[in-house]
Length: 98
Image (tube, rainbow, N blue to C red; front, side):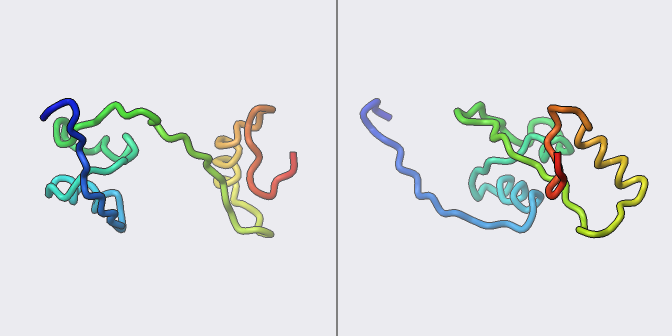
């Protein structure tokens, strides 16, 4: 390919029901995808090529959600406390006042 030539791939978006379906589609040669590295941890090494792409990793916000007006079980409350770190720098859960 000459340096002046451009690659113009045909982009066809697909919507899959699960990460496993996306991985199977990739292995079947249907295209590429952006997946969390955590999704690939249970696969044998060498099944997928992991590219170093500009703008990755994509950072996301996570939220702890639970039914409003219900008291959490001891285990659920302990897990929520763990997630929040209960420190000054920890984000508040939805609906929780600082």
